[in-house]
Image 1 (cartoon, rainbow over the protein chains, first blue to last red):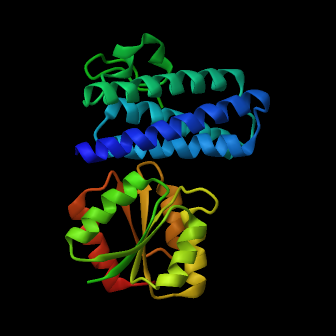
Image 2 (cartoon, rainbow over the protein chains, first blue to last red):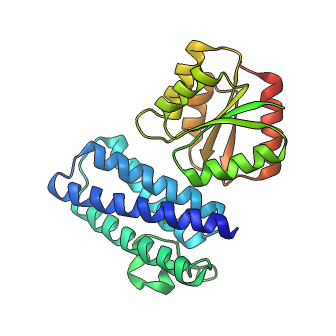
Length: 134
Length: 123
């Protein structure tokens, strides 16, 4: 699996850089369809790769961002202030989790263990019994 | 042995599915990273089967299936979807896809689905 890990790290890093650029574009124009579409596709792609490697923490955050962008795409609306905050926080979480894979070679810890501010992005770790988020 | 075209915007996914396909003795004749390229590669290589990601830039996998079906009604096209994309899978099947597999790929399921699709061909 280590060769797939290397491909994941390379591709996820590129995707995160593209997401970061798209977020900056959205700050200027929150309805920019190309940026919304790109954020959806990049989050979707990171989710698929992370799921294949059983990086559940990354899968969960990427899935949350993908779902949010899908909602925005379907509604044909601009990303609102709360949505932008979610995207910035999610991107930051993904970057730190991908960095963790690069440094340790292991699946990253649950997002909430890395950063309590991830509560809006993920379900709690198993056994903590909080209500499941959509 | 079948000649297969793999279309996915993630090289990670292309590499993973290529390995499964080649381990079964099939040949990957080309890889495409978006829907436009998938249709162009199809015209050039005339594969026996296409694995097609749904979410891709420029032209989605669903539009690429429609493009391929205008050229060939018998080739097998297997969609690669993710959990939660049921409505897109339905749309792809209506557009002419033969079958689908769900990411993350399970090698046994991929092999079985491709074999079944090769038997069935286009709908």
